[in-house]
Image (cartoon, rainbow, N blue to C red; front, side, top):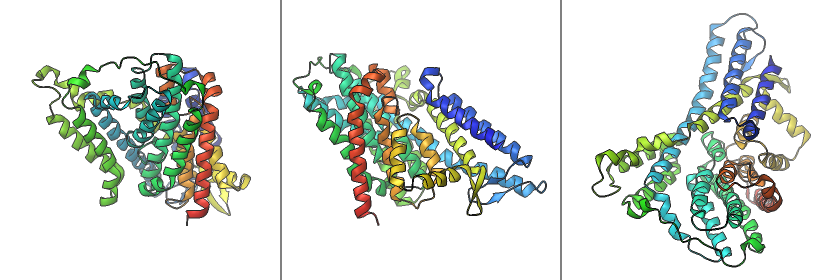
Length: 459
């Protein structure tokens, strides 16, 4: 039965990785995987086929007969994991809703006024800086979609746009790595109590900057970024031009998201409470701000929060639910013993990897490169169950950096890359030949700086 549970995880993980060839939403295998694993875990536990370890590290079993206390402990263990998963999901729902509210009011359209350079090199740096900064605030996926959408209104030729779009992916992933709200994986580590917002930003801002700046500096020397850009006349977004609420909602929305880490530091409450507070505040403002003068009552729904809620990708939320349930099941399944103490599957795997590769920095760099091939969300979720390092350990910071930026090595290696690939029809092989080496140089440059900081400045 233990082998069967692990096999379901492997098959489900493989189906998620092959999302595009299978033409199957990755939420489907994730949900099936997570629920099936817990179902088998429950059946096996009640039939005394194996033991289960709870979140406190205590092993309990029904091998010696039925015990209501043990059965209750199993359900309590599931509820503990589900409550932690719920914190992440509600945080993401809040953040997504705020971004959608701002977008309904065409708040992000204001950013196009910043994109004025006609020099290809200057345009590259402007787009890169915007991607790096915005991704740290509204997450790397949203920042990529917004900037590439604007890019399509600026550059006429597709052959130039794909180069800029590819570089935006690198900058957005680098920007999301140093912020607790910049990438799903950093959010998971933050909410999971593995890192603090201050610690993550303090130790990753410089490596992330290197990951962004180094490939951009090299790119300015390449032929596609020389000379003047053949620009379109910037397409006017009529709604942005006439909406009175665009600036208000942009500033309120971004400010509300940035306020979440402050709320946590001041109150000590979990981040999702702060995000719900920020959502309530943005929702309140959106109810009273007037998008246009004399807006007909039958048009108000276009700018309502209810409309924003309908635009959220709940398939992504369900994907995270399935993945985190599956990882929690592996964490709860007793697989073997270390020094005479029974441990869960993930903990056993961590010890095995550590014995095979004693240097943890090498392990994390390999995990970062692996995140270009497999989804970084389950990978980071697995490491959270595998390792027990203290809060703000350099290992957690390095995992955040590697998982966030390693996905840039392939166009399918990150959510930002997949989005750009879809919008601009970026060819996988073209990206592999033209961009992967730039992303790799940036990734290794940032990793090298992190190891240097770790050696000289971590206590």
